[in-house]
Every structure is written in structure tokens, then in C-alpha cells.
Amino acid sequence: NEIPAAQKLVKPYNDFLEKNKNTLPTWLLQNHPKWEQPKFISINNQIEGKPHYSYFNHSVPVVINTIVKDNIQPVNFFSAGYIYNINADKWNLTDFACDYIYIKDKEIQFEIPGSLNIIQDYQKWKLNPQPQHYPLLTISSINELSAISSDKIFVHIDKTEELEKINHNEKKNLILIISID
Image 1 (cartoon, rainbow, N blue to C red):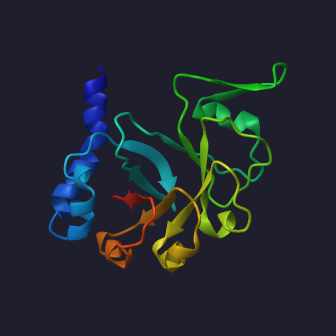
Image 2 (tube, one colour):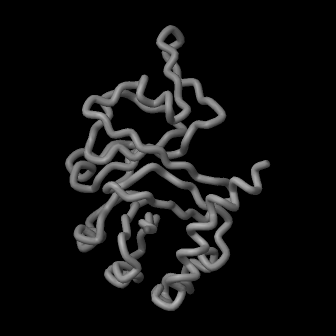
């Protein structure tokens, strides 16, 4: 039952690679050989109003959820698979718990579960970097890459041409989030 669902998730990625294989920078495919035969894909709701897909080189899926509310509370994490137990003062995870939550330019004013990571728009993240929080850069802010001291940096790519703007010699752990129309 899981294979057909996985195939449906991977299809847009495979279609994207097939369509753009001649325009993707050589350095990208040489330095990331798993991109030629990806192990998996995880799908998220939207970034900047467009569906997007996230690619990782792990043996298990990495799932990103989106929560964009003005005042994020623990109850908002329920849809992401996290339930806060007030009486025990601890988080319970469901089988559907995600690995990352994208919060756009919002903030979280409470302690998050240890297994969860937050992706935050770079302009907001750089004002107050928090543990378990990672920046999401756009191509317009990629020139600030060398100043970022985070062990993971997410970069939103809208068009394959934007990949050329990334300095592939930069020794940073970049995770590309590519919008696919």
C-alpha cells in the first residue's frame, strides 16, 4: 500500500529532473549524485503560495509541515503530529509527526519537542537565531550565505536558472527547496 503513494510523491521530482536535466548545473549533479536517483521526496503545503518539494539524502523520508499563524501555540502543532500534554508537561508524538515545521516569518514563544526542527524565513531568523531553528534563504539573500553560522541552511529555488547563483564552493550544508509548477 505504501509503494503507490511513494511513487505518486516521487513522480513530480522525477518529471522535474527529466525536464531540466540539461539545464541543471553540472556541479550540482556531480556533488550530489543521489539527485540522479533520489531515495525519496517529502511534500509540503506551500512556500510563497506555490507547492514545493523537498529533497534530502537520507534513507527515511523527511517531512516538512507548514504552520503560519500570527500567534503560534502548542495546540497548533497537533496537525503536525505533536500533542502537548499539559498535566505531564511533555510532548507526545503521533505516527504522523513531521521532522520540520516551516513558520515563515513567525516566532515560537515556547519550548518545542527535541525531535522537531523549525524552518524560518532568513530575515526573521537572523534577528534571533534559536536552537533547532534553521534559516530559509531565497536567491535574493543568497549573497549573505557566508555570514550564516547554522549547521543547516534551507534555500528556496523558484527556477532552475537560480541554481547558478549559488556559490558551489561555499562549505555550507545547503538543503534546496525547489518549486515545481
